[in-house]
Image (cartoon, rainbow, N blue to C red; front, side):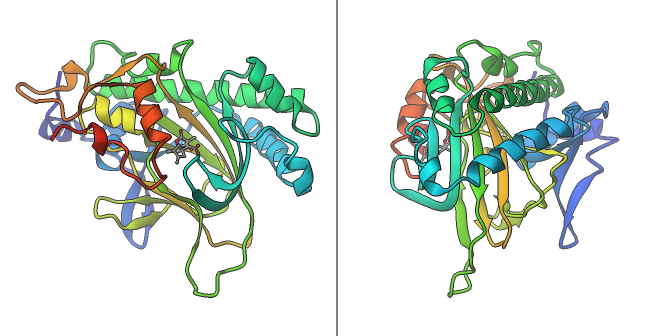
Length: 330
Ligand code: GA4
């Protein structure tokens, strides 16, 4: 059932009360997972921002900090040791280069498939110095926890939309064939450039998947673009998760939910470390607006495609490109 925004507003007697304040303006929504109104607040946040912070998520801080410190150990190795790791094409260690098409940033990272038991994953972990089995087991429990959080958020989203199938979105991530990715980023400190401009850590882009779950240490850098294209700094919070809508969810909602443009600016003298789970669909999944979300007479804004077609096209694009526009109906 399509709930008209006006109806939703009426249900909002207890709307999103908690916001992150920025320069006297209220912006980034905060979703309290223990609040019975969470489902409505998630719908609203996905519509208005495509981005929100999640608190009372139930994931132990120890797990986040244990993985962070393993990541820090790896990134603190001498460069020649890190260069022994499998390169990030597609999965492995990457330094300064982002993606295959010439994008660069002030960043180094480990990009992993969430299929950690595969032969290629074993090869990757074995190419890392230190204790690969411990590192892998930490990554595994962390991915398990954030995947649960992501699927819970997606179930609440379906609930908030009053959809009969509560798992319409979450099943994509739960599927054995789900093509999800995990990324550990390290933005090393950098001297301010002489022109007083910010150094880009990770250039502006939208995430192609369904949903992304980010956790970082308490160092600033993440910014999201608002409706007018202005950059809004997201105050970091190492105890919480930040969730953003990806291109696939934008399509499934026929543009009702916004795949938020975001970037990371390296303007600090301290290292920023982030870990992001990108929940994606199985390769063969057809990505299209859900019929039950279309109002009477509402047409799909997008041409049909499968996740594998979208990914192929995304990997031919530059980071800042609008990847969905190729799939928009004229
Ligand atoms: C953006 C979201 C994820 O970090 C990522 C990125 C991927 C990469 O770093 O290899 C991409 C980028 C991301 C979108 C367009 C392509 C692919 C770099 C790039 C230029 C892992 C993903 O899935 O898409």
